[in-house]
Image 1: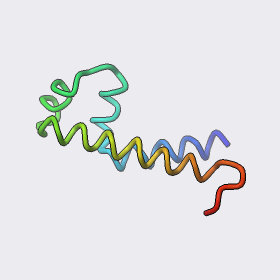
Image 2: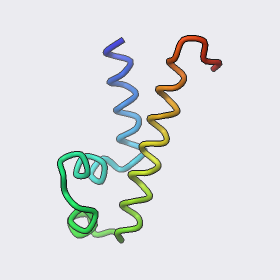
Image 3: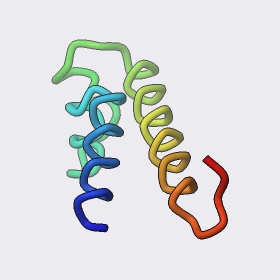
Length: 68
C-alpha cells in the first residue's frame, strides 16, 4: 500500500511540475515560487490546483467500492 501511495504522489508531482508543489508544501508564497521558477503567479496556482485535483482523483480510485 505504501508503494502505491508513493507512486501516486510521484505521478501527482510530475503533473504539477514538482518545483511548484514542493515549494508550496515547504511554505513559500505563490510569489516566491513564481519568482524562483520564472513563471507567472497564476501559473503556479493553476499547477498546484491541477496537482491536488489529480491526487484527489487517484486517491478516490483507491476507496473500497470505487469503480475504475
